[in-house]
Image 1 (tube, rainbow, N blue to C red):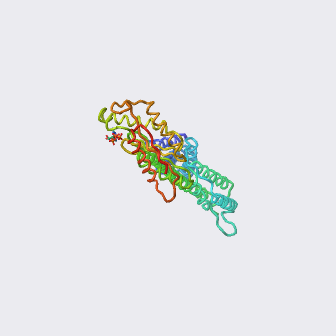
Image 2: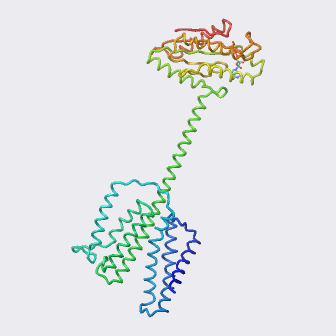
Image 3: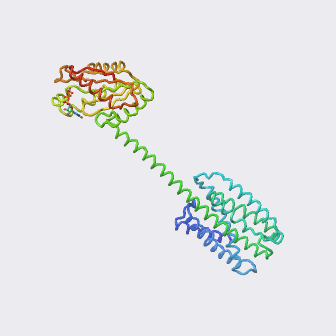
Length: 403
Ligand SMILES: Nc1nc2c(ncn2[C@@H]2O[C@H](COP(=O)(O)OP(=O)(O)OP(=O)(O)O)[C@@H](O)[C@H]2O)c(=O)[nH]1
């Protein structure tokens, strides 16, 4: 018969929780409050009311109806309050942000163990005239709730409740020299308060930690995206849009840094300006689109020759290209320039309005061991002068200047 009261209790709690949409994982404070209202508060109250009515109707219990309700209600409420969250925490384990062990945790453990020893060894809650009730352990439980999660908090509540129940069942009076019924009532109230406060705090803290972790993850993701975007922007700002090789801006930076390096190491630095011959004619004859295509092919040919690590190729502007060869004297730079002219001959890109019948280039090469007093512009000026000579001497050739 009494089973009916339990079925009513569970059904009411279940219906209220289902209607209010409580998550079975007791994810946030709202879930914990709704669970506490639906199960321990309302469900157990209805169970108590029904159970007490059955007891009064079918047995010769002399206690008053409301006191039976109270004992039933509190007993069931506490059972639900302590065991349900723990079972749920084990059934639906949550991925939690790891909380590293801190030295203050150890201190709290030691203090709690000391307090628990005193509370549980006190006689009628008193040692040498000092009152020590289980309420002294409430801050430790709250600390456990704040530092861990619902699972460990529920385990803590279970251990404390079990110890307190054992103590009371052995006739001890941990809340002072009170009648046993009052001791039990105080014990129940204490466990109830402890459960509500600790579980609420544990859920709240878990929620805050999850939220913080989520925010940190999002910030890290956004930062990474921003870094990639910045890198792409940086690349775009230093790349020539038409040919895909480095642009003039990047060349200026590279020249400055190679120049400084060469000044420090006293090694020769070579620079060559490469200019397509009769390119105006090419554009006029084949059209501007084909001219663009020709510039891309020229960049490809140059890149295939200037492929030594450390050498640097860029589009200088218009139909002019430039390369920097660090630690390279004029002879080696001249050898590279020759290779370039040979590569154009081998490629044989048709150019009907050229004296050679194919696309050729003129190259002005300059080499020097940079000095602190001179400027990178010296090298560019010398290469430009050599290029002018190469153009004047019939094009499709390289002219060298050693400064
Ligand atoms: N298609 C195309 N043409 C370009 C580009 N930049 C510069 N040019 C053209 O390159 C040509 C350069 O002509 P000039 O400076 O007279 O030189 P050139 O005709 O090559 O004669 P030399 O250098 O003396 O052999 C001009 O017609 C420019 O319009 C470009 O990005 N695309």
